[in-house]
Image (cartoon, one colour):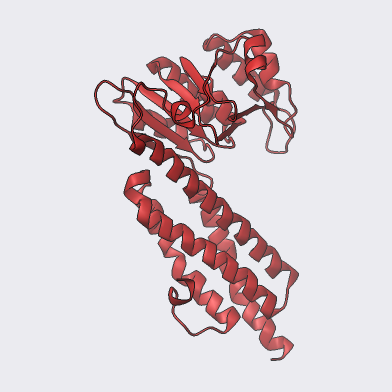
Length: 307
C-alpha cells in the first residue's frame, strides 16, 4: 500500500476523533453525575456526587435534593467550578446534610469546598481531601475566587486560620487534609476507618447503599480511560503515524469505549446513570467502529471481536 493510500486512511480518524473528544469533554466526561438513593424513613438518603463540577451542577444538586430532609452526601471528584462547589456547599449547610469522602475516594479542589458544607463531615484515614487557591483560566491565582471562598468559609463558620490553610497552596499544587491539620485549624471532622461508614455513616448500612458509590466510581474510571485513549489517538493522528500504529491506537480507544457503554447499559438503573447519557454514548459507538474498520481494514462486526 502506497503513502497516498495510507494518508487517505488516516483522514477519517482525524475527522472523527475530534468531535468524539469534544462530546466527551463537554457533555459526559467532565459533567458531575448526582444520584440519590432513598432508604427507609428512619435513615438519611444517600446522595452521591461524582465527576467534575460544572457551573450548572449547583442547580442540579438543588433540584435532586429539594425533597430531602436528611441526607449523607458522598463525594468523588477532582474539582471543577468553584461557584458550583460553593452553591452545593451552601445547600448542604442550609438543609443540615452530612458530607463524606469514602476510604478509596478523592475529593480535591472545588470538591473539597463542597464537602466542607456538611453539618457533620466524615472521612477515613485513607480518604484524600485536597485544597489549593482558586485560579483563573490562565492558571494564575484568582483574588476574586479566593474572596468568594473566604466569604463562603465565613458563612459556614470556619476560622481565618482555616481560610489560610485552605487557600495557601498554589493553584498547581495541593494540600491534602490530615486529621491533625483539621484539628489545628478548627475544621471539624470525624475520622472513620470503615469504607462503608465513611460513605454513609448511618446506624445501618445496606449493601445497596455501598454498591452505588462503588459502581459510580467504576463508571468514572472507565470514562477517564476513554478520555486517555482518545487523546492518545488524536495525538497519534496529529503525528501522522503509520496505518498499523494508528490501528493499534483506534482499537484500544474503541475497546475502552465499548467497555464503558456496556457497563453503562448494565448498571444504568443501579448506578442511577441518566438515560440520556447512555443514548449519547451509543450515538458515537458505530461511527467509531466504522472508522476503526477503515483504519485497520477489518470486515467483521462491531461486537464479535470484543467478546
